[in-house]
Length: 373
Image (cartoon, rainbow, N blue to C red; front, side, top):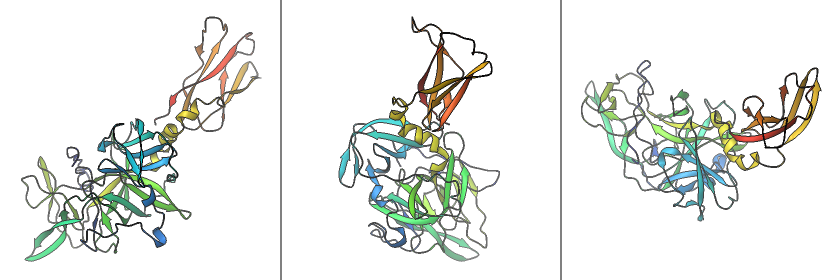
């Protein structure tokens, strides 16, 4: 794993169990063949994101604009390494960290020939998804003995081969990850999930989750973490794995193990992707940063409304503005007129109360920064 394991226990509900170290490779229900799904999906899953999975160190990133790609913040990276997409290297110039989640956007030199549309709807629950990752598949069987019967309930992670692969799953729930994590899409590893049913493992971080909307596959999540770790006892380091049934095993970390009682139905583990739809404002902010200072962002009118003056100006969604006034242009003395205003993409109005009688008053609109929440 590229960083230390992160364990988050939601003890009140005893589900979500724990988030273990960030993910690395896809594991499948149907096969342990390491060459499975190593070419672009076709049929109903054609153009579902394979074409936009770029190599970022040992991980993945996805272009979301002509000059930007998005990945997981915890995978790191620097401007000294190249982002490679479809055999072409792109030099990163700067980075933007989301203050609310594990997302990170990088701006590159040059222009991507195409890029993924982002999923803006908030109806992900129950939707079929395609997920991309790099690395190995299954490792050793994970078996549990219950009433004298031995049952294989999943697999430990195998060796990491760094090979791009794809799988399918369904958004089973949406979880609140807490401060610095934000909203997450969760998909469970179900035994009856079908041929392409996939789980993530260590190295899949930064890879993409795509959901189809009106015939177009759109970026809905960035791979973040998985349930775990697991153990057969309540001591020791345990192991990482992709389990279609975690019943009869301990879940957590070496510091705290919680036993999952075996039940008549499977208790599948799952993976988590940072939810794109909840960070649209921030993403738009980053993509439009250069546009925020464009000359077209300007005052459009100042009109009298009773004893007030209404100042109108056009905006770009995600940019934040400060309206300022001056009664004396000499000396460049400008006074803030109200708080920062988050652009909507439409014309906005600010009222200067009881200012209709003012003479020689000037206004200007200034870009401050981008909205982050």
